Image 1 (cartoon, helix red, strand yellow):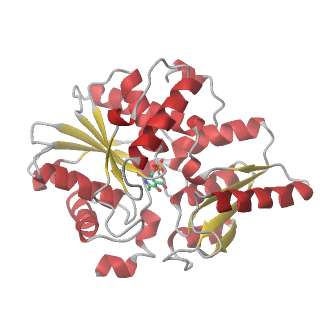
Image 2: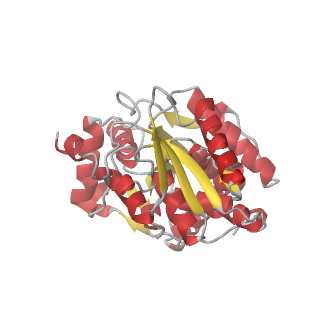
Length: 336
Ligand SMILES: Cc1ncc(COP(=O)(O)O)c(C=O)c1O
């Protein structure tokens, strides 16, 4: 592990390295390039996903501080919330989730799994709190933390998506881990393709690539934010993480690529291209993507190949960041 990261408090929650699948049938179906799928959907915590690497650092620190309850947020079917609740149960912390009720508040997918975990789920209306990343949600979570303190608990409020520099450090590691796997296969990748949501995952990868001087370009595919907000948020978090790790590298928005044209009508709204991408990957590789994040990211990769921006001479790593539980509440959209 990168020495500066090894110094951070951490609790191991997943199994690493996650597999790097050589997706030859998918690659052939798309007329090249060589595509590897980095299987962070197989981290081993709950149903897997990118938040496992982040939570190892957030909760490693929390353990040292005697935290016994965690408060997280997201949309109704938040994958982050599920990973947080599962990790909390494993670490004997009480999980509280304040979720903004969206199109899928039914007891399916992640909400069904919360029920099994016996997580404390509070769904709030958009009229009350429009956005899980806004100030009204922060105030709501802080109020809950006060209530818990009055009951003698020691709670931690965690920002949406686990958006902290400590968490992004987990994804700096992922760049290192992936590069070592490619090296063992005597190959290199020109592109890392990653979903951009709350942006910390891409920020960590960007920092890892730059710090390790890898000859690889990170391409983010946004599922929610438009530019210039998306690129700026990645650069800001990459810089904050570099400062935390005393890494002598820095970023501006211009160093970062995020495509914001695969979002469709909005976050969590299915697109035809996402649906077709999910079916193609399942039918060629036997791998399920999710309808909110990785399906749209794969749709972006397919489009970049079609447009000749990524060619048959290139090698790409597509990071599968999990989220598969959301396929079930999206059953209607999946058959549309
Ligand atoms: C399955 C999945 N992929 C990707 C992301 C995006 O990660 P980040 O929020 O770090 O940009 C998320 C975030 O919730 C997710 O659930």
